[in-house]
Structure formats: structure tokens, C-alpha cells
Length: 125
Image 1 (tube, helix red, strand yellow):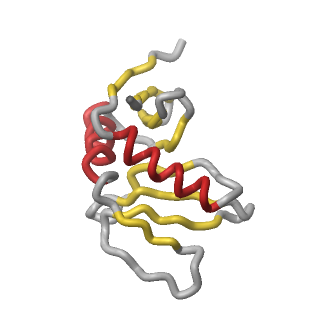
Image 2: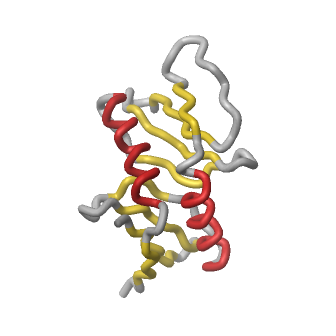
């Protein structure tokens, strides 16, 4: 089972989704409150299983309706994905992957590990 880990920073709160092996799959942006952060986590769990994939690395790709995973290439040439909610806001973003297949595996890992994942708040020292 996956795990959402919430951390408090000077600039706000954010969460990471971790796989069973405790590797980070994807991370959120910053939230102003714990309540907003928890809503973001709930949005990932709700939207990830339903989200289709929009592969923006393909010429003339088909624009999909939200919720969706967007696969794209960053400036360094690595593949990344964002999960967008129904309202079009990005909920989580991935790390960079050298291969598109690995990026797609990351998406499947989000789908698998987000539903029913425990939520842990880490207190920084």
C-alpha cells in the first residue's frame, strides 16, 4: 500500500506519494493549510484511477478531458507527468524519467498506490 507523506515547510505544506518500497512517485505543490493539503490528497485518490493519459510528446496528440495525466518532456529531455483534476489544476507532478515507458509506469504506480494509501505527517526537526 502506498503512503502520502505531508511535510511542513516555511513556505507551506506539501505532500509526496510514496510507493510500497517508499520511493517517491510524485509530489504536490505547496498548500497554505493542512486542510487544503488533505483535500489535495483526496483529489489524487479520487482522480488518479479515472484519469486518462494525454501524451503531449506525440505530434498532434489528442487533447483529453480532465481528469488526466499529461506526459511531457522537460527542458532537459526527460519525460514527466502531471495529474490534473477535473478543474484543470495540477495536483501532483512526477520526477524526470529517461524513458517514456518508465514515466507510464510511474502513472500506473500513482493509480495503484494512491487509493487507500495511509496519510502520515512528518514533523521536521
